[in-house]
Every structure is written in C-alpha cells, then in structure tokens.
Image 1 (cartoon, rainbow, N blue to C red):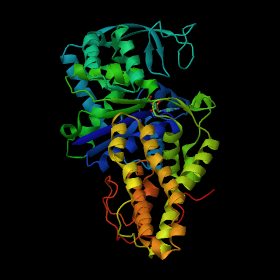
Image 2 (tube, rainbow, N blue to C red):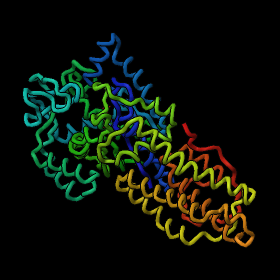
Image 3 (spheres, rainbow, N blue to C red):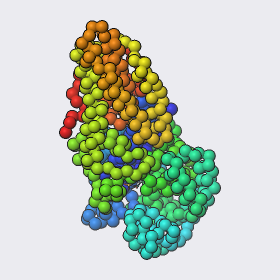
Image 4 (cartoon, helix red, strand yellow):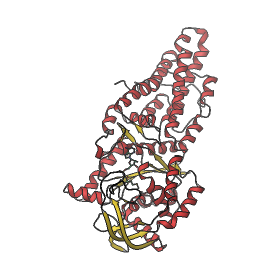
Length: 497
Ligand code: MSP
C-alpha cells in the first residue's frame, strides 16, 4: 500500500526555526515508521514562495523576490537535512511544474462553476495572508494573531464559492470522524464550518508575486490556494518523466500546527471537491512549541536554534526530546535545561547505558556471541503486542504516546538487568543456563527496541542494530531471532556532555 505524508510548506521569507523542524520531524517519524511496515512511502516538504509578505521582504532587503526565495529555500532544505528527514521531494511553489498544475486545477474549478467575479471589502492581514471576518477581529480592527491594525480593503477580484460546500463539508466530517486528529481540533474545524461559510477571494490584483490566473493574468492566485495545491501538484513532476499522482494521491496524512487548521480543514477539501479530486484521508494537527510559555516565533525573538541544539546534542536527541517533552497535539514548553535533563537521564542513562552494558556483558561472559536460549517468559509477556500498539498509536497521530509505550520497555529492560544481576550469575557455573537466558533476552529486547525506536532515533539505532548484527530494518516480534549472532561492543550512543 502507498503512504503519502506531507509537512506544511514553509514561508520563503523566513529562516527555519525549531517550529518548522518539529513538523518536519513528525512527518519523518511517520514516513520512517511506515517504511518499516513495508508501505510504499512518499514524503513531501518544501517552501511556500509566493505572496505579498515575500514581495515586501524582498523590497525591504533591496533584492528580488526570486533571489529571496532562492536563499530561503536553501536554508529550509538545509534544515530538513540536518534534522535527518528522509523527504522524497522538496517542492518550491515557484517551480514551473507547480505553477502549471495549479493553473490547470483552478481552470477546472472555474469550469465547474465555482468561480465568479466580485468586489471584496473587508480586513486582510498580510502577515497571515488571511481575510478576517468581523467576528475574528480584536478591538480596533486588529489581527487576532499578530495584533496589528488592519486596513479596510476594497478590491476587485475573483471569488471561490466556498459557501456551496457548507453541506458537503458537514457530510465529510460526519462520515469521517477521523478526518482531523486530535478530536478537539476536529471539533474546532466543524464549529467553523457550522458557523456558516462565506465565499472567499480566489485571487488578488496583480500588485503581488504569485501564480497568474489563466483567464485573467492581471490577477494572481490567492496565495493559500496556490500553497495548498502543492500537495497535489508535486506528484506530477517530482520524478522527471513520471507522474506519481495515481500512485500516491489521495494523501494519507497532512502534518501541521493548529495555526493553519482552517485552511487545511475547510478551504482545502472544498477546493478539491470543486476540482472533483479525491480528498486527503486525514490531518494530524499538533500544538505549538513554546518558550517561556510563548509561541516560538521569529517576530517575538524567542526561537531556539535547532542547529545549535543539533551541534551540541545531535539530531537524534532533538527528535527524541521534542516528541517526549511535548505531547503531540498539545502546546508544550521546551527549554535548554529540559534538553539537557532528558538527554542525560533518558538517552544517555536509560537507553545508551542499557545498550553499552548489555553488549559489554555479552562480550565479557560469552565472547560476544548472543547465547542460544529461550527468551525469558517475563519479558515475552511484557513485549507482547508492542509492535501493534505502537503502530496503532501512530495511526491515530499519537506520536508521543507511542514513544512512551516503547520507553516503558526501555525502563523494563533496565529493571530486568538489576533484578537478574548477570554479574552474580556469571560467578557460578550452576547458573550458566540462566545467564544464557538473561543475556539472550536482553540482547533480543535491545534489538526489538532499536527497531521500534528507529523513527525517532535514526542514527543511534542504526549504530546499535549494526552492533547487534541485525540486517533487517522492519519491525520485529520479541523472541523471533534465535541466538548465536556475533555482537559487537559499542561506544556510548549518547556520550555524557
Ligand atoms: N506557508 C504556510 C503553510 C502553507 S501549507 C500549504 C505557513 N508557513 S509557516 O512558515 O508559517 O509555517 C507554519 C507551520 O510551521 C506551522 O503550521 C507548524 O507546522 C510550524 N510551526 C511554526 N512555528 C511553530 C511552533 N512554535 N511550534 C510548532 N510548530 C510550529 O504557515
């Protein structure tokens, strides 16, 4: 089966920060996990390069929009690589292939009768690239997110008949209760729909930088429609000479934060319905990473540089920390002290030390050969069903809960070492059989855990799997590998700082 997962495409006028890295890592965890389940995975990320803010930023910096987005796309590509994401393509909305496909889709939406010409009068926030309804505005006509005063704008443009989709969208949500996860975000989306949908601008007068409307090149497409379509257009040109649309569309999971829920849960499915295209299967909506209880954002100046963290702790530690510290779906505070604590106690001690210790004991007591023995029934019971539990949780967008399930077993193995005391067993010939069993059971536990943890900790688990003589990368049932494999000792996976 195919599995198609996306991140939002990030604005091409900013510098990547940990918030962007977070969504990218989440999508990568899903992509890696699904590959382990044998799915045919396509993972897309990229940059959103059109719109007023980009044109304005370029002007301010005395450069052209194209130069600006070229630079920014490089920084985002670099971020994606540094967090060790395994994306299959990096889309840029200034790509020829994207622009052409966007124009074809919007033409179809118009042919289907969902586009008309009109006058827009209302408040527009250039920072959100969003038209605000009077009820959304703060006192003094201020943007509810950026708190800046918005001007009343009047412009001639093309409209998309969003209102027509009120009922079809309500039906969609009734028929697919899992369309938006977690639940409370679905309820938010539904409340927005039930509140009544108004038609929205599909285009803006061409003072801006964007995709010209095929039938009226004086107007450019409203940047959100241009941007949302990336998920669909990318498949048509990601592989030269090959169209992957049939193979991967509809998308399985769009990952994003709650800030862009409305666009993905309302505009996007409506747009696809209007173009008679199949709808994505679901949205995984996460919360904000906060610092000092505020959303990290460049304008607030409270960003934690993911690159500094990676330089110091490694990308595995960053990936682990973010999903361990903050429950996926909720907002959560992060801090450098938090990184250090989790790194020491959980990565260096609980996991790293367990691995080094186990392999060192097998080296010392059994010349590095994993004994041939029956797995300890105690551990068999504890590991029972873990692969299904983790898979099931990931299918429900529970990225932190699934990691916790695995971590319970990491702690279990640590307790097992303390209880079984292999160093005492090693002193008595009579305990040879029991020592074989304990050592086999520990190494087997490490193997199963390394495979399960691989999506969160791709680098260190690969090192560990190599030391365990493990060739496979898919998920394994506890006790399924017989003993007899030659194992290697390893350097600490997470060296103490
Ligand atoms: N370009 C639009 C998205 C278009 S998708 C068709 C956009 N770009 S953005 O650069 O502002 O990125 C927003 C996304 O970045 C959020 O939805 C989230 O995925 C991620 N995050 C940005 N800041 C974040 C936090 N502080 N915490 C968690 N995620 C954050 O919106």
